[in-house]
Length: 229
Length: 281
Ligand SMILES: Nc1ncnc2c1ncn2[C@@H]1O[C@H](COP(=O)(O)OP(=O)(O)OP(=O)(O)O)[C@@H](O)[C@H]1O
Ligand SMILES: [Mg+2]
Image (cartoon, rainbow over the protein chains, first blue to last red):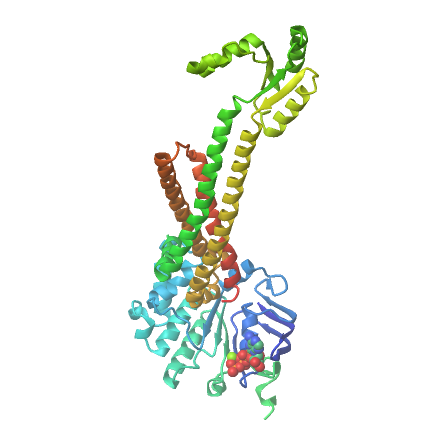
């Protein structure tokens, strides 16, 4: 589903961000991505949705290859991915509903199908009653739920979350994480970068740790016990 | 629907630049239009004039009429020649009297030279052709002098060419300026919507979808500029008609062509700019 083959990403100004990573994330998996700041988590995730292309190696996501994907291919791929960030990235001049509908409108969805789909995902993220609120009228946790609803509305096979709880307090963090678990339980794979080790420790999900652009630990390859101190 | 609404949004966001884009497009087309009109009218005048284009070869006194007749028949076979006619001394005098009306007394007792009057076929009336035919007629030894509307026509031709070139140069200059202004407008619009555009990309909107409203906007501005230019040209022509000379105006096909050209300026200006600036968002 998501495969990295000896992927390296270097920037002219900052050097190597991701170094020789080979990785497979399967259908319906839940993967934590962790590591110090600057380890390359965001860069890795950006290559999953082909915002960046590898300097060397190949990324293959659901049949689309980083080697030959056209802009059209990338657009089509992104309709099958959901992406959320620490800073939510909502449009301030649109309501929650309109923000979610936006993802359908700009991909040419039939008008009649938009309303029901938006209602369904807003219910799924627990915001059925706040559809007409603007982002400034919502809490951080609620805004992130809107962003997640927008990511889900196209029925993605994977949800990519780059520090989705980075701006949230513990309570909201637990709420968002619970939501991601439910989404995963319903069959959507989740790749989540986070600094929140507490969250990771309490879960039995696959954990990948990065350091200086390389994967230094992957719980899929070695038991948790073998991890260096 | 969305595109149209979005296209109009930038008019509200940058009304001055938008108005400026429309105006420069209009000026560009106005320059084409005005000088085009001048060229068109000169052409029209030339067409009328060319109907009368004649090469008149005056025959030396004492040339036998048979010689002239043979030469006339000969000239009539030139591929450019519509007709060639011998005008005897008597006929020449009669014609002069007729044309001069009340001054006919002037010709009392005068002797006018006989001539061969040559008319050219349509399509063979350009100064170059006239000159070459005249030169060939001039090779007959008995031809004393040869006259044709050379200077006149050449001047008009030159005037037409100058009008055409001036229109083209001015029009292109304005077209370039309008493209630059459109580019700046688009740049502002793209930057103002950078956030929205990046989210569109994130959720999988295609480039063409993202571009569409900007292109539509350029197109709309081009059409508006075209309409404005038509109006300006029409007004200018109205003034010229009233105060200078009666003129002909563009037919519908040429007017539509002008509009289309305006739309193209708007569209191309937008496309170039949007292509460049979307990459940096
Ligand atoms: N667009 C870019 N241009 C140049 N260098 C970049 C770019 N993006 C990332 N980098 C570099 O790549 C390295 C990894 O950055 P990245 O954002 O992937 O780290 P991260 O693990 O997500 O960090 P954090 O936990 O702080 O979000 C950094 O050293 C950074 O300077
Ligand atoms: Mg990061």
